[in-house]
Image (cartoon, helix red, strand yellow):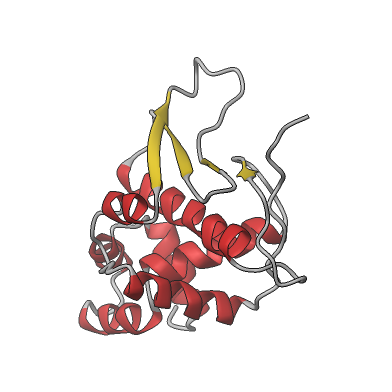
Length: 175
């Protein structure tokens, strides 16, 4: 039996997660497009790279969080920078929403592990967090206007994939 449990839904609305993510980004000094490694370190975490092809129990795109809050984000060696940035922000979403955020009893959870290819609301919440963290609404709307709705240029500004920028634009009714 593993000492890690699976993350549980935080239950916040998509809008509330979005606002929380933007607030967390601001609190930790993140500016859109900047490096995420200092943020991970500031929060007590580390990032590891796994060769997905040689690991039998693939942990790429996963996070393990100890009871004391120390955590490790695992990335695959074969993914690109923009994919890794979204994955890191997604895993930070698990850390904030599913570890730091109090459960229904007002207490923190114990050690958790969120693995790649999870499904359901827990993963949606982490995706919402990643989008809100990397592309806060005011900055996204400003970039959209300045760059005349060019998804390629907007994605480049935030260092996210065109797909992530497209979903964000659709969320705000811009596309």
